[in-house]
Image (cartoon, rainbow, N blue to C red; front, side, top):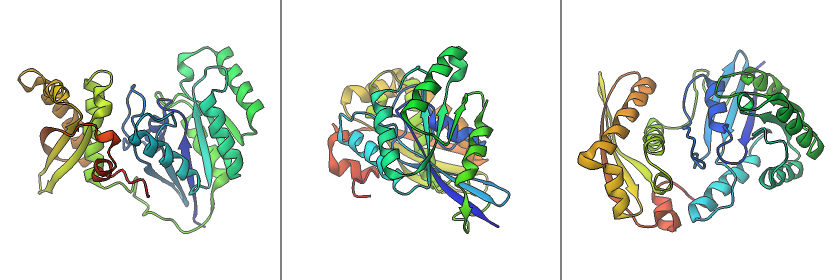
Length: 295
């Protein structure tokens, strides 16, 4: 008997939602960074075990938006609840319920969905702080389960999946048994490149970047990828390229390493940097980068 469940992974930025998804899948499909607001679109991860298929929906971090891109990201996170069977709320062990988390809980309550609370980053604090966090959230909402984990080390991740088994219902699968995501390889390539920009660049600049893969050509032993990196200011372009192209070369080296692991073949990566001023507040430019408010 085949069973399936669509489960949204929600929370504020930088709590480890994408790291949790990657840990469950055992393979990296969602980019991660210490910088907040890394995930911009909903990312679908598929984990099939025996007759059970978990469809995990990693969402952008819920925050107070300052740009139209931010509005889009928050809308994607909210809309995902409407297409899910259950929710995983990921929080950090800070001992109390924040305003953003309280708002998410209110949305979960209104939706009537079952929910598992995941307290992540437990490897960074002592047990009393974890206990205070669990008590605070237990008072705020009756979660079906509470699971302390460290997505970074993998501790407790399997328990999260076990607790989500309660949401599985008899149904034909929506994805092939060997699928891990519905994202096309071009989109994954663009996301990997953007992750390396987040890794290499400082502060605000990487949040003002977008990546478009213009060429993705596969041959027997090589994948050729040409990608354009867009930034908001001419001064940012110089920083992204770096002296004698050093920064862009570093981004390319890191990206190529991950792409070769994911694609299982050699990759030739050609990166270009262009300027599109204030694209994060332009409806036309947001749509050109695949951020569509009407979806």
